[in-house]
Length: 370
Image 1 (cartoon, rainbow, N blue to C red):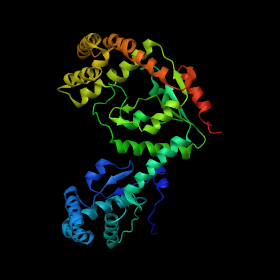
Image 2: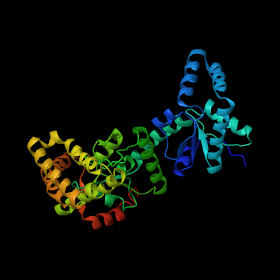
Image 3: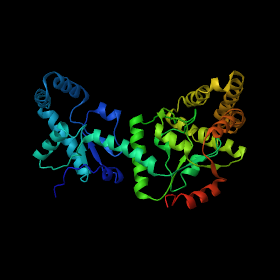
Image 4: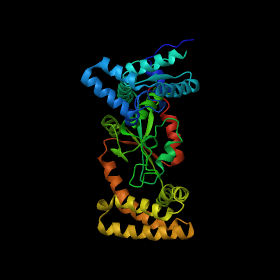
């Protein structure tokens, strides 16, 4: 059965339908979708050359140049990669930037080989516009509740145990603090993060249409990712549930998340220089908040962390970090969090322990629209 071209963007994203992106790699790197793969018609240099010809001589001249660049060897190479994608994902679609010349050329070349593969009308540009529109719709339609709590309360751990959540930090691949990057320090581009956020919100609206959505309390940035202004405003007005956790428990959680969890990865990826790399991660992360800590406090915590690092490398035990973490919490993070909480317009609906928060979320989030 020959499938038709589509502009059903909702179905594409909700069902995670595979998409073959035939744009040049430089375009794909700037922005794409989580269920897409880059199998380009033109490489970056060819795209630039054809684009220059289009501006100078017009579309016909650009098409002629593109065909000239597509030598028999290059054409066979492209067809091989496209057919591999088609055979792997027979239910998929292809697209270029606007669903125009490159999509139709790819489609035509495949058809000459007896392969009928549909394209996405409007291409990347139309899908990107759709996701931005739907992101606004999501914040208008979906009731939000904010999970708040002091640093080290384990908010992300609790958030992930609820059915009605969206993990902003998970999408951003960052824990949202000065120490939040992982060993690879990799974050998606701003565009890709927005695309993923919109798709996740869209899925929530359609799979759980009556429920609210629990988000972790965030600032305006998650690492290098900038939060959309509309979302920031909606979150600032949303009601809050507050996760309570004893100080010693928070110290242990922070040590587990940032030290005990990360150290083995550095040993694995940098077997010859693990000590040096991990020391840089810890001390450079602390240095990012040096001005806000103040010189005296920074020097004290920095010295404690150096001692803790030496002890970790000698014994494998991370317990010496506790004193420095305690100072960070009591003298920096807790006062800052209290100040920010006082500025919020929202009211705290509920305070509770981990189990109490989970019970509240299960009872109240599932039917917030009713």
